[in-house]
Image 1 (spheres, rainbow, N blue to C red):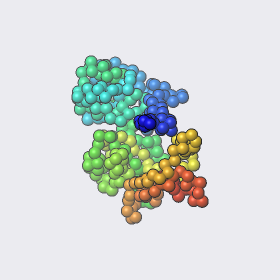
Image 2 (spheres, rainbow, N blue to C red; image 1 turned 180 degrees about the vertical axis):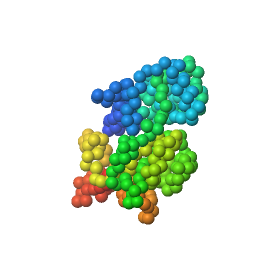
Image 3 (cartoon, rainbow, N blue to C red; image 1 turned 90 degrees about the vertical axis):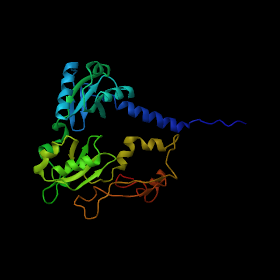
Image 4 (cartoon, one colour; image 1 turned 45 degrees about the horizontal axis):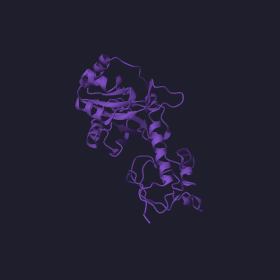
Length: 291
């Protein structure tokens, strides 16, 4: 009897389909949204089509001012298109819904290359895109304010910015204590409200927001939202039993000035989702939502 190899279990095909559809949906407007909008983390940008000459001028200004730009493309660019643009000095960085990218401008491509790449809109990445309303209006939540009146904030840097550059920029405006996570390019800092404008003015910064509230029990809400319960049940039965999981978070010393619950480090050994139904169901998957 010959053994048939290379067949993929039905359950894994289902997971693959879910992942592909999720990725594809990220490029499609949600109900009530429009291709006209670019959905920045700090708010929406209206991006009506511009002429090639207008786009060229925006890129020239960005190059001269050492600023990042936002680009809207008519289609998702291929790897070849991205490489061609980069060879002319225009590097696409982070994707933004819908069909938009943050880009670094070290030089301006010829007009025919801008047209070939399908670039239909461009705009400077200005300081207003870097700040959340909570910081802009001064409506801080209590957990984001230190006892001495300083503010706790999360800062995300552009994806090409390395840790040394980010830390140097923060130190240039007198922020010397930062919890920088290289993997995701973010830092959590404490700073005086008086230097907020200086912080917003750092061109390496993508966005700034007050720190999030300490994490509570959110798993009962999150699991149904991401479809985890469906994958665990028949006919899929993907429960992760027998898989060891390491969860590593950034860790501050016990003497940290930041609020309790913002940082921590833990190791979790998973005994499978079935542990949810035991007498201590939340021990295996994290009462605070991190399991």
